[in-house]
Image 1 (cartoon, rainbow, N blue to C red):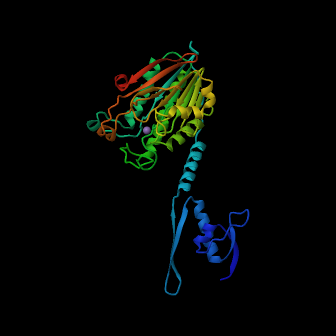
Image 2: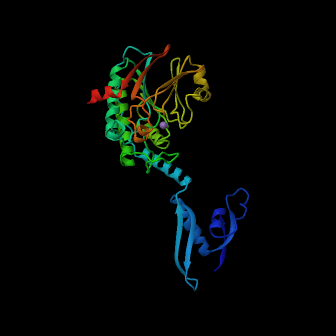
Image 3: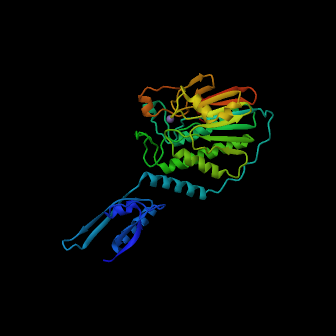
Length: 372
Ligand SMILES: [Mn+2]
């Protein structure tokens, strides 16, 4: 069979069993002399890799006369393919979103100096807990009802203000893909059914909450922080919301991909981080190093974290840091491990001049009484 000279990348030459050459100057490939059959193989590899599959090998079965009997291609999804797929999903989601019409603004109320921060962390939507085993039931239906109940009660209880922050500090979703496991360590999780359902309920619930907030406040800022349970899902959640509300001038969605977030309000500087990368012990310097300008102009500085589900407050020379409780029930892992922290969520009110001036604490019992 006649040979011709073709440009190949070194991994393609390797796949053909040729010794890879040095790439020619300024190019990602080099010239090889190959026959037509080999060239057809290269073309089919290229077509396959266009379908987001990485070729890891090819096997050929020939009979005793050397005729081709069977040939198959081995492929697998690589890390690079995974990233490509996630990006493709995000872009598709964005394309299909018709932005929401702006919500009519409420009447302005008297206190322009106040901002109410609705603090929510470790909500673990999609987690399944069996009350008989853990003390309280938890599934997607309960979680959606409790969240809406929390916002109804919390909005009723908080001071009149024109501005609000919805600070969701991570682990809003309990699991992050087709397998119900923790992304980093692959620990098996107790999950309430299917991922598609979880995605739908997550988007619907957050949209319900944002609608409620826009009905009460002139301006709302949304933080959707990354947690250790939802590093990928927090990305699409931020991006989808940002697309959906692109025509809503009264809403700001923070789409910062770095898991440290900052909002300023008058002389207040407010920081957020889930707590999976940095703990109460050393988070303050990280916040300051990432937001030097905002910190430098502030007089009152607060950091908010979650992750461990129990309440801790720490004051350092730089700021007051609070690790928040969650409203979610305990899963079997937490219950059997003996973690017994209480369940509540807070609205913290910041004054432009004076920093924190008040807070409302809404416990799970209050929400159950209210919604039940
Ligand atoms: Mn966590």
